[in-house]
Image (cartoon, rainbow, N blue to C red; front, side, top):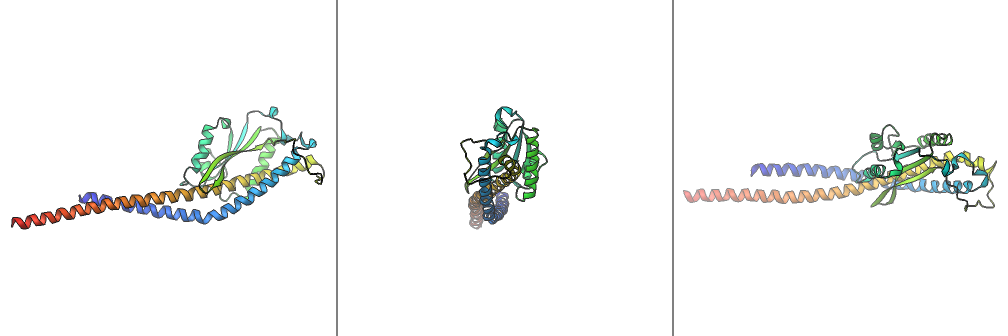
Length: 274
């Protein structure tokens, strides 16, 4: 019985240590949420505005033969996939959702992958190590590489696998299409909008900045999703740890009560024998 009590005390101590860890990680995640959300919303706004400009330019007849608007029949099966995962674990299903999408989505089979985030680099190979500190300079460098490679027909499609932030409680993987740019012929430029020196020149020069903004937006949204997922996961783990400690403490008290009762019974029996 004494061995059981010692075992229960060790388990309580171990779970209590885990509880302190989950609290600390939850507090760190909480401290990052506001800043991560601000960065996410700002980058979303920029990407949406840049996408609107690209959409208007791509609808212009002068731009339709631009290499970035390669037609579907010109595209083969070679895909470049940017995979954005987290820098750390303990974020619920955040990282698992990304890798499950790679495994289950047949359209990603055979894609050449560029990972962003430590977990993605560990799984897929060399890439951009940190998603949290992924900078504009890194995004622009990668954007130029993607633009040059696509224009030179080294690959036929560029996609980004990231995580969409829906709410604090909900995030889900999504695939963003980068190249080829879609040409929406129903989109018309405003009559007051004039492009100098020409529509196709503006489109071609603006595309690297557009891709840079899109990369930044996807990374920022993925990081905000990671922080939110970790906060929720740590809250849940903390609640489970508290419940386990309460259950073990009750079991420990019962075991101690049983030992005390047994000792009293032995003392009483010894007194009667005398």
